[in-house]
Length: 468
Image 1 (tube, helix red, strand yellow):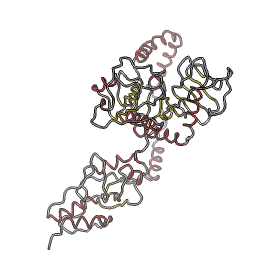
Image 2 (image 1 turned 120 degrees about the horizontal axis):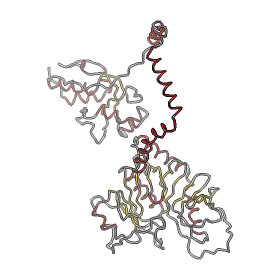
Image 3 (image 1 turned 90 degrees about the vertical axis):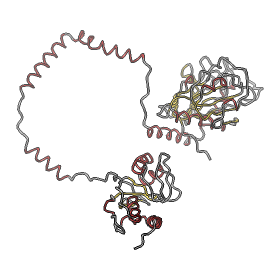
Image 4 (image 1 turned 120 degrees about the vertical axis):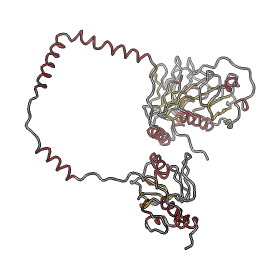
C-alpha cells in the first residue's frame, strides 16, 4: 500500500475542523493516546490572544491561560506560539473548558491527531501527547453532604467540662484582676515598643504596594471613559484659564492646573495670587468656580479694565482623572519650558509621555519625535549651557512665539545630560526617566497613577489614543 504524503494529510485535517473527533486509525498508530480537549480554530484576521480570550471566554485578561496551554506546541503548518504571542489563521488553540461560541470545538487534541498521522505517514512511532488542560469537575451532589451531616448529628456526644478549661478560666480571671488593679503601668509598658516601631516606620519613606496589571488597566480605562463622557470639559477648562490670566488683580493669577467636573471648575494656582471676584478661595493654592461654566460675564469690583494686548492662548493637556475623585486634570503648559521627565514604572511612564505629546500636538504646538538610535542633540541646536533650571511653578515668560516640543521615546541616558543643560529657551522636551535638570520630574506607578511632583496632584493616567 502506498504511503500518503504528509502535506496531503495535514491539508485534509485543516479542511475539516471536526475531523479530530472521528477517532479512526489509518496507520500503525492510533488516536487512543490523544486526550479530549476544547480547542478553537483561529479564523482569518484574528485580533490576537487577547481578542480570542474576549471572544470565547468573555475576558481578555485570560489570554495568559490560552498562552500557557499552547506555548511551544507545533501547529500543522510547522509554526508554534512563541513569546511574541502571534497567532496565525487555521491554528488550533487549546482553550479552557468554559470556552464557547463560534469556532470552539470539543474533541481529540487536533495537534496530537496531526502528530499521529504524520508518524503513520513516515512509518514512525507516534510521539507522546502533551498533557491536557484540567477538565471540568462537577460539584458533589447535595445527597452526600446531607448524609454526612446526618452522620455527624448521630455521632454527637453529650458535652462534658474539661478540667483544663476550668484551669484556663481561673488563670484568666486572675489576669483580669491584675490588669484592673495595675492597668496604667501595664498599658504604658506594653505600648512602649509599639510606639518605638511606629516612630521608626514613620521616618522611612513609604513604598506603594505592587498593583495587579488588570486592576491598573481597569482604572485607566475608567478614567478614559470619564473623559469621553464629558466632551465639554476641555472648553470649560480653556475658558476658565483665559478668564484667570485676563482678570485684573494685584498679583496675576496663573493656573498650574484646572480640575473640571460637570458641576464645577477648580483651579490650582501658586501661593500668594489674588482670586477674581467670580472665584472663591478654598485654600492658599486652590480656587473654585461654583457653576462650572466660566464663559458667563464677570463683573469685577474694580475700575474698568481694558485689554490692549492679544489674549494669551493657553496650552492645556488633559492627563486623566484625579485619584480618589471624579475630576478631570488639565495641566497648564503655557509657561512650561525645559524638560518634563517621567520616571518610575516603564510602561506607565511611556504612556504618560505619549499622553503629554498628543495633548501638546492637539493644542497646536509643533511636536518632533526623536527617532530610535539617534542622539538627542540631533534635534536640538547648540546653545550655551544653563546651570539652574527655571522655577517649577511660576515658569518662564511664554513670549509671542509658540514653543517647539521634542519627544524622546526612550529613557534618558548619561549622554543626554550635557544636551539637557543647554536647552533653547523656546523648547519643551518630554522624555521618560529622571534628570537633575528637569523642571518637572514626575513619578509613574504600576497602579496606573502618575504623581506630578511639584504640582502636587496624583492622576490616574488616561489610555493613549490609537495611532493610525
